[in-house]
Amino acid sequence: MDSTALLTDHYELTMLDAALRSKVAGRRAVFEVFSRSLPPGRRYGVFAGLSRLLEAIARFSFSSAELGYLAEEEIVTSECLEYLEGYSFSGSVDAYAEGECYFPGSPVLTIEASFGEAVLLETVLLSICNFDSAVAAAASRMVGAARGRPVIEMGARRTNELAAVAAARAAYVAGFASTSDLEAGRRYKIPTSGTAAHAFVLAHDSEEEAFAAQLEAMGTGTTLLVDTFDVDQAIRSAVSLCRERGASGPGAIRLDSGHLATEAKEARRLLDELGATATRIVITSDLDEHAIAELATAPADAYGVGTRVVTGSGAPTAAFVYKLVAIAGPDGELRPVEKLSPAKRSPGGRKRASRLLDQGGRARAELVLPAGSAEPELPAGWSLRALQRQVVDGGRAAGLPELERARRQHRFALAELGPLALDLAPGEPLLPTRYSAEGGLVP
Image (tube, rainbow, N blue to C red):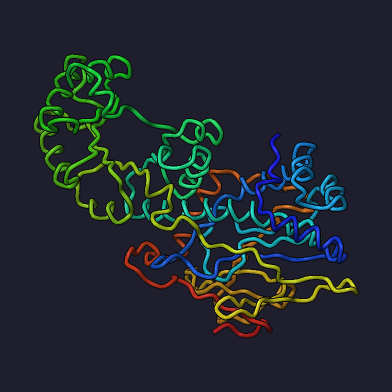
């Protein structure tokens, strides 16, 4: 099992080293992960990566290899090296369910442990949460724009090879139907799909020869790429070759260039004219949620998305931060702490997050209350849904979240937000985040 201990910033270790000297490292502490804002124009965020995060915590330990590097580079003192040799996270983590929607200011993660244990986890936890959640949020918007048509994740060639696997998982959480990345398919049991690129067609002496080879290898249910030369002629060749093999047409054709809406309409007309009415049309070519929405009236049966989903569709991070909100004093009692910098202030103290629901079960606000406070008084028929649950207790994970459950959670959360969540026009977050120090009446 590979260690995740050096997937961190240098300053995590220098803070620990100094905290060991000051004796603060052993004090109980509470950190929260939250976003101060959503990317411009977004109505909601999607929390993803929880399973990967729990695995990273379990693998956060220092073997002789990691300790040797730190000693050789003189990054920390011998006292700190001795502490790290015995490091194992023994605290607790409360988290949003994977696939849940989130809003600014509400803690998606709460980590409680000694300061020394918790401070080391900042970078690895943020790197997972920020990347996976950014991909999931972009993917969710694309799935909404597709209006029930399947969306295929095809971004492996557009990002780091390991990030590609994580991106495929996050996109699947948000509702994508499949991925082209085989490692993601193997590791997470995500359905995989893929056929051929333009290079395959160009490598043959003719387009017809390329199609024939693919049909012989893959069967007539395969998807043929028809825009290498002339789309009209390619469709005619594809249908003719399938007829020779006892089928009315290929399983699907793929369009990857040109004016996609026009090309799709012309392709559908020709396929129907040739009797290939069951042949589906898959559209690719640098799509995002806005391009997919523009294709709503086109006769597309599925979409393939690459660059714009693995890069978060212009928002490559969810902007989560990892902040200390409480620390034990010399008496052992937790006391709230908070940063007072302008535009970066957030309430101190451990908190609990809930979603405020009206009489019809529609989400109206995020409510963030002090941990242990009384339930607030609500209007008749309104209710609160707790958003966090404990996922690590005493350093041990309660179990890794199931991928299919995360997909269901996301569908549930979106339905709770209502149709305005799917509006692609720039706007403010759909729900306000309300803080209450007393737990009083919620307006």
